[in-house]
Image (cartoon, rainbow, N blue to C red):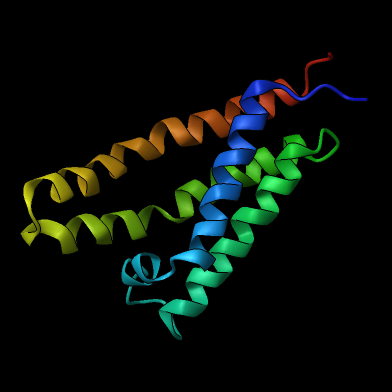
Length: 126
């Protein structure tokens, strides 16, 4: 049975949990869908939830881990505009919520790094 590296396991769990949240509590995700995207925000919320669950599944499997981790890094970059919108839209909210929205912006950097690191680790034996 192949080993499951802790970095990959945690990344898969993060993606799976976030993907599930898009279906369990979609309203907060709907609210941060950039307005420039066509169609309804709920459609984009569901699509991004499906993408995160698919990425989680692929990161969890050793044979697809490298490519899935690279795709995850790209996904984290692609959803950055939603985090920017959230920070902009939440400027008038109470301070703790504003701080949380703004904290998401620099948080994307370590998430991208984590996904890239997981891809590099997938190439190493054992």
